[in-house]
Image (tube, rainbow, N blue to C red):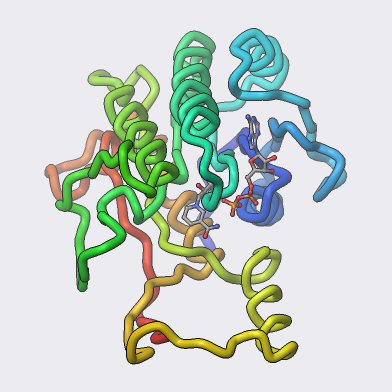
Length: 262
Ligand code: NAD
């Protein structure tokens, strides 16, 4: 039999997006079922019954504070971000960095116990060099003056979240989940790739086609988010026996066993 979850109430930031919506669906399958709320700037799509949706822009601290006072979650899963391929550094910094800082400050004020941020594997990669079998000991990279402005903003936000980890178990404990490109039911990428292939639009290949590229199955990302939240809640009661077991204040690369070649 599966173990009962310790997550009694959860708030998914960006819960109407691709990963956030799947996270909400999976939360509702846990036993006993937690109370679930969502903050998003577009709450008209991907709605689920019995979930409380709040129109909240995380760049607006007042909006966050008042919706958080009403929803009162124990756990926050922060999955909101502008899409990755924009060339708008100010937007990324406003949403991913200032928005994340706003969330952390309000969450701490209102007694949230666990904060899990969906960061990205790109926070440890310069997007140019080869990297194989990278692990969680890799340092965060800051690349504001390069094309990787999305990754830069994710790295700054990732560090903010880790720095916000409380030194006492009674405070808010934090962790970062770092997936590679996400695929799986409900993703916005795979369908488009298949459609373009069917339309015969892939006519060129750059390089020898043997570059390896990491993708992460969305159910694995969600599983990792839940494991992190459970571990943070657990650490408040039973501090981990060794540093190896620590989840609070740590970031984790999430990947699949198999590499996919293009
Ligand atoms: P998505 O675009 O489908 O969902 C993001 C959600 O955030 C959207 O619903 C959007 O409305 C919301 N949002 C954007 N700005 C907001 C704001 N100011 N206030 C409140 N909500 C806001 O993205 P996704 O693919 O589901 O990605 C989820 C998370 O995972 C993101 O943080 C992303 O950086 C990270 N990530 C995604 C991938 C990937 O391949 N999709 C890979 C690694 C990491």
